[in-house]
Image: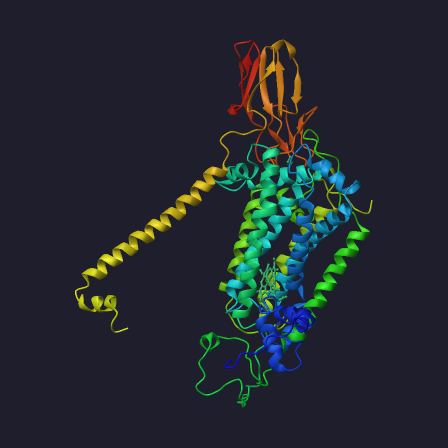
Length: 423
Length: 164
Ligand code: HEM
Ligand code: FES
């Protein structure tokens, strides 16, 4: 600026104020060409988690079924409703149950928020499992995505543990006995079992200490770890070159790149040094489309769908609340939440094998999966013929689990004896 | 870069004595940092493990022996023990199911668990269901004030009674 520009008059300044504020907030106009589309994804804090372009395969609804995203959105709903519930909840054995009643009776929208929180929690467990199945059946854990699978398995366990810790908080009969049974299962682990149980409960039995501990884990420790791991999960998806997809058959032709984008003697930015696969920018005919608006619309769609489902469920069904805790009288049968009923069913045969041995082996197998199965054929396709063996093994595990859950849920009555649900 | 004294120094020290000292310092600080990380992780564990618990005491008095006439099998649910008296012999059997910690109820045949159907005989031996081991017996003693004292931290052989 060699010549001083005359400052605008006060009047002009005021007139332009809203526009100025707006443009300082959103530095890009609504994109109308490709350059603007890229720069919008690039310069916005919330959007820059996306690549500028995504492969078309990523957007095929039947490929991912949006299940990973759904898990994420359910987690968001859980955080928001959970923080709201925290304004009224007190983690005390004498008050917790009354607070639950207050949520029902006196707090505006209290019961609705509790419903949303409860149904999202159940939903998240289910959706995360389905997401894991999707990743398995499409062979998406193969190189270079091995470690992201491992992070996924940890996220799955954390999701279960979050549900488990949350289950105790209402301090009703269901909560108390489910946690009594659950923590006793932990005590069956060899050597450290008793110590783990004592550390979790802070006492010999479930009581005030346990309630406080579970509360802290549930509202602070676990969500923070999950948030961190989800961030790494997403970061890795970017660094692994986006989602898995079948190998592209047509080799991309050499193309002339727009002059503005690649000048001779350009000083290279960080992008120039990035190694390995990353989504290409530029006008290469590589089967990719711009993230804005294609990916964004897809994400918005999944979000609306998830939220709508949770809102509907919360309007139709109320989260259960049983009698207040009675340490003397366990309900009969005392059942864990549904996703642990497979475990509980196995525990009824052998406490060690059902509760500790088999689950540990199962988790170790899951963690080791990408390091055991390293063939690269059949990635990016549902139920690829090349992966028949791996898919069959996984499917078998899955079905056995589901059958156990169903038996535990519907076919077990008082004293855990076999009952027929049709009687 | 060429004028960087550090760089020049390294080049001079062809026998690498400086490099060794550096290396050693790096190792030491590495060990130090790593060690402190482990130590602090460990002390967090120690912190989390309560020294005193606020719940039910493990050792408590239940009353004079006369309050439990011969033939008594009285479950003290809050204490999770069953007081048994046969003639002059008194014992305390745990009522916490050894399967997964539900409270067993006193039945004609012994004890029965409502959670997964474990059954025990009069002495607490498993007679059915998933329970892996017998109900433990706890030490019963006579406190100086003449009351019976049960110590749940001390298990005794099944069949060992206190004579009153
Ligand atoms: C808190 C739970 C989780 C969240 C929020 C989450 C989120 C996501 C999202 C948004 C994606 C993008 C693709 C999609 O929507 O399917 C994804 C991909 C992926 N997830 Fe998860 N996920 C979770 C748990 C898991 C679990 C349990 C596993 C497996 C054990 C896993 C393994 C993977 C892998 C390997 C990919 C890359 C898939 C590909 O490249 O095709 N994630 N995750
Ligand atoms: S807790 Fe008694 S049978 Fe399982």
